[in-house]
Amino acid sequence: MAWDKNFLRGKSDIFFLILAITIANLVFFHQESWLMNPVYIALFSILIYIGLKFAWKYSGRLKSARILGGTLLLGILFSLMVVAGHKIHADSAAFLPFTVADVFWFLLYFLAGCLLFFDLYLISVDSKIRNGMTMEVLPVSKWNKKNWLLYSIILFIAWIPSLVTYFPGIVPDDATVSMAIVFGEMPWDNHFPVFYTLVVGGFLFVGHCLNDYNISIALYSVFQMLIMAAILGHLMEWLEQKGIKKILIYLGLAYFAAAPVFGNYAVVMWKDPVFSGILILLTLLLIDHVVIKPDSFLDKKILICYSGLIILASLMRNNGIYIGILLSAGLLIVYRKRIKRVLITSVVSLGLVWFITGPVYEHVFSAENVFVESIGIPLQQMARVVIEDGKMTEEEKAFMNHLLPLEKYQDYYWPFLADPVKWAPEFDTEYLDSHKTEFFKVWLSMLTKNFDIYVKQYLMGTYGFWHIGGETNYEFVKTDIAKNWWGMYQSQPFENRLGYPMQEKLAERYDYISTGLLVWILLFDIVLCWMRKKSIYMIPLLVLAGNWITLMAASPTAFGVRYIYVLVIGLPLMLLYPWLLRGSSREAGS
Image (tube, rainbow, N blue to C red; front, side, top):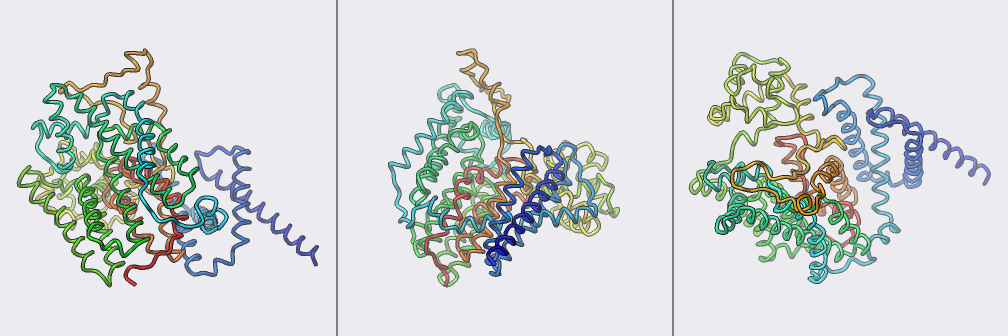
């Protein structure tokens, strides 16, 4: 009998090995950019084999409806991502047609996706792995000022080479627009958030007093480095207080300190790094006071901190208010039995944002939110209908022609970026602003007749934010000071003092993190919370998810790490999140 069991076990091993080799070869064959290197295929086969064995051993857990449902959901989404993403070619801006063979590939990747995410679930609940990463008992979170200062100083020092390389800093075109607004050379426009422009203006004032605007840039660079070092140092200290082992804290510090991209983003005059840092602080606050100690969130001090972070994020970047709306909805559900304070805080916070960015900005600065900025995705869908000669009535053609002469769409349209169309010299922004309701009516009318064109454009227009490895290095890093007439320039100390072309050497060495991969890590964390019956842990993740959702709803571009930089700096938290689902928590509203 023992021989029979060993015989059957051997047969299953052979079956799993053959299945693993088959899947590995098919995946490498299907991915056109992957060369079928035998060493890589063999290693991939071994990983799949181990995954199959691991999943088979604990397959009984799939009897749970939540575990099975979560696994199937992620498997379906993963397969759709791969199959649909395979049709898009960013280099040639082409969308290949679907074929019958795609049914086979869908089933293959569905199987692979289910295996992957079920194994990840099993790893997240494995006690040996958990104990190897965290302390056995979740400690009470107490702020350790000494560790926070130490970690922050380490990060600041690690980024100094970037500051020296690009001294006095990095000023992209967006920042020069804010400067031009401050100097009175352009009208105020909340497309470039007024609050952030005022911050930049404060530093320009110092430079004006000292008769050197390069001092303004240097001060801004150091100021942003201090802020980002303090926030990320706090993140590392917070993780340590949650019981994460020291070695993983050091690994997180190395992640932020070693790669030059973080030094670049600490210096660059973009609103995105600080905005992302604010969202990280908001996420940590929600974990501490909604998940771990739900009663404490109702304390006035915590509600004021929460409200302040929501308002600050919304003033730093225009999509912040939508994150606040999403969070408010989640919190009102959680605290539905004690709703008064949460409701008042949400209404006051969002109301203040609306009042400041609306009446105040309009009255004081004559600055309004630009309507065309919020319709990049639908505008691109309509433009693609024109380009592909889709179905349109004469009235719809006339409307599109009013926005931009029909023959000009071909000149400006690019499926991965809305800016060329909406900022075309011939584009009639005034007509659009006076026909907002008609715009949405025409969009909806054209949707019913050109659904396939709309879907293709949507997938292409958001490509980098859902497909793993699907982006380019567009808007990844900036390395210079844009041309200006205010005497701002980089002094290039390495080149001029040491004769070493540091900027030139470094320019081609930056590597980017797949934003699609980061999104999938976040998605897994969210579904995992549901699978493990810890839905309350989803609330903090709404901060990160909300930023992504706004991009999927109104992103002007299909690529751009800076737009979702919160996931880049939040990666250590997202990777460790499955092992933070350990503390005793309860639904605040239950």
